[in-house]
Every structure is written in structure tokens, then in C-alpha cells.
Amino acid sequence: LNDIGFKWRGDFRKNQTFGGDPKVNRMVAAKVAFPELSFRECMYLGGFEDEELDTVIGPQTWRTYYVTLKDGLRNVIKVFDTRTRKTKAHLNREALVSVLRSEDADRLTKVFGDRAGLFEGFMEK
Image (spheres, rainbow, N blue to C red):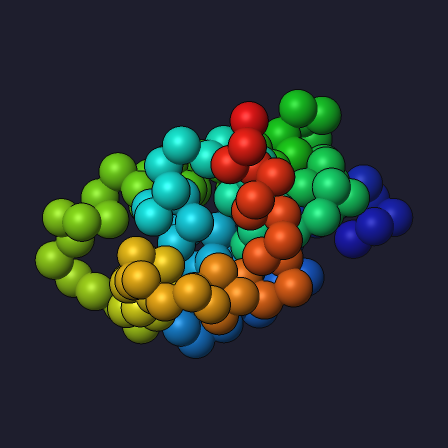
């Protein structure tokens, strides 16, 4: 098929994770608990790096992984509290949000791990 110019489509690199991707779950929890954070800051707290976010997806050069995540995050945040059908990923995200909203002194470390130090810099702006 390659010899006749067939173009392969689709992104088959990433398998679906039961319960949601932990990076995405942390990213969503950060945006729900702290809406004043920017999308990119939530992605950093979730565990994403600039190299990963700036990867171009598809034929359009503007369609990066950041844009895809940002669009998905907007959709999830819009219906987060009103959602009736709760998947395992949504339940995991709710658990992370409840930890972030608690009064526990180590709540940021429990959710974000070694990236908890970034949070202070983001909130100073």
C-alpha cells in the first residue's frame, strides 16, 4: 500500500488506560480545584512536558498535543459537576479534587507528587 501512495491515518501509539490517564486525571483535578490556573499550568502539574505538548498531531501544524488536551479539558470542565454517568476516570478525578479541596497540609504532594513545587510559583502571579 505504501508503494501506491496510501496515507495511513490515526494515532495508534497510545492505548487507553482503564480509569483514565493519570496525567490527564491530575490535570483535570488541578483545573477543577483551582480554576484560576491556566491550561498549560494545569498540564505541567499533571505531568506533561513542553516537548510532549508541542508535538504536532495531524497534517495541520497548529494542531499540537497541547491544543488537543486543552479542547478536551474545556469539555470535561464544562460538565464536571453536572455529569450523571460517571466513568472510572471521572470517579478518580473526583477523588483527586476532594483531596485538593481538603485541609490536609500534604494535599498537593499527594496529588501532584514531585511537581507540587510548581504550584507555589503558579499561584504567585
